[in-house]
Length: 268
Ligand SMILES: [Zn+2]
Image 1 (cartoon, helix red, strand yellow):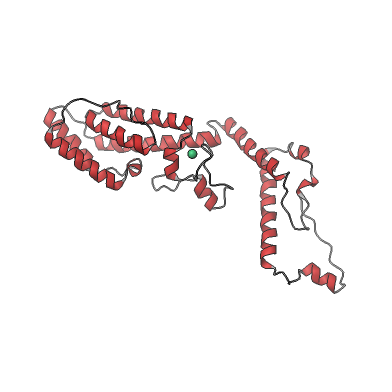
Image 2 (cartoon, helix red, strand yellow):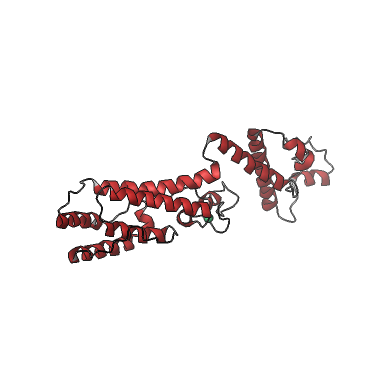
């Protein structure tokens, strides 16, 4: 997750493990790691907003100055595609020297990038600002503030990714099994109206009626679907490797009036 190597649908499709690269929640765009942070699906937006404010309010317990939290809210709201609610906005003057430090930290974090902030790439000037803010106010400071900050940022990213996975795979194992079966059934129902053209050595997909197919258990369905995928792959391979004027082995046998060996039938 910290290296952005998360199994988004874009990555899964590139690796041949998903048929579509489109986001399963908003159904509108190629799903990348960045899109997971900004998906416009309404339930995802609500969850991201809750997660963000939960992390920001936890920062107040470590004595983080409100102008730092307010800055985080502004920048992370934009990063996560949320509206800025100014929940931590404080109408008080920031000491002049800390204003310059805040500006410097902000500039450097803008260069690193706020999506990277959520992966723990947080500029050291934030810690410096926290240190000087407490020194000027005289309030006790938390020595492990920077560690808590990084933990909070990574935890926010982890919660967003977990919410994404709950939508796709379900939150409980029972829900997960039900979602998997639904996904497989929808794929089977898509195959039957337009069955793939397979090589004649393979039985036709529609040889087994759909109603009979639907009584299979999920594991058998998965095996059947992967067998069909393999047969489609074999068919493509055969049609790609043989030129238009080139005879197949069967055609050559037939042309030479040679008896063909018995064809082995494979399970549908
Ligand atoms: Zn989306």
